[in-house]
Image (tube, rainbow, N blue to C red; front, side, top):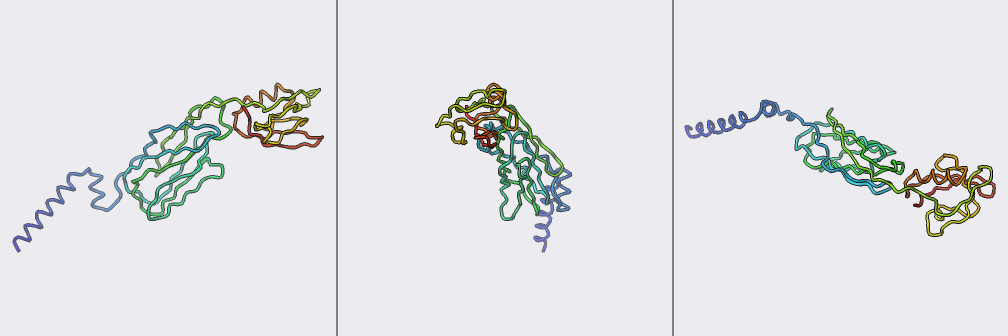
Length: 243
């Protein structure tokens, strides 16, 4: 009986020392069973280079190794980019991901208390309408009231050009296609000789100069609607711009 009481005393002393060595917040958590004090999410350490157009690339948000109550994560994509996929690496339970139709934002729902031990990976791609000069653009991630920024670098683009030869229509009525290179995107888009180009991405085209300016202001490889007239009939072709 005396030996048992001594053992209990040693265990109690050990537990007291363990709790006593913690911070006040951690001690309170142990006593009450509550979640430990939370930290703001850590922003990604790497800044990806995105081509426009180009494939999506992953961005990892490092875990904080803490237990979190049920809640929602909100992710905003940087300007001129779109979120294509989110992988929260949930294991053993479902955590639904919702991505906006245009990829401008996404959410992750955590229905149960979760130990965040794996990175959240967000896949992001640059949009075709990214500035030709490129640059750095910033998005955000909000979790439990804390917001952190994350950054992508959109690379400089190559100015676009028409994949053939054109000639001005008298009176500024557009430009007539005189030749289409069969190996370039203009032919794949459906341009044929004698088509009259009247607009690019909704902007009027009156001369070959305005056509060149309109295409050179956009990235080669991006796709835009081009208005034409063929045998007197207005049409629209989806043109992946040549360089």
